[in-house]
Image (tube, rainbow, N blue to C red; front, side, top):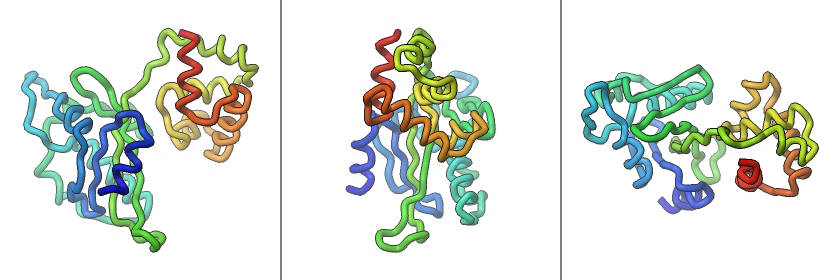
Length: 203
């Protein structure tokens, strides 16, 4: 599992779950176990550890987007109550635990040296960061950002991926990347993490 561990090291304490493309659980780290264990049903009773259905739904979406078909009946028996889940729209998948909300993100992993031969689905559960208390407009003025760059930077702070930013702003992913490149240059940073760190100075 070293390939998974290497990817995890580049993230800030995410929950990580890895499935085969047949949706068989191959790996789950302690952070993901903690997040899922904090989900609760409407009676306030903590269930045994089962993967929430919204995560399986997200896996199916990834598979469909890449033209891979699978029978959903394979995992229906593992569902637990939907009341611990939150999915506010078709583009953003959120998992709601007792304490925090988490973005669900994921991608397919290709077999080494064999493009398009996918072997695993890599899922990240990343805490939703609220922008309350951060003066985004002040930061935009300080770094002389355009209005669109200001919108992008607010969504970056909110934890949205480039694809989600593109959908919310009705622009292409390529244009999002251009905005990010420009605002990073203006802020003299080289990563999204550094962008977030600088924004926290405006709390």
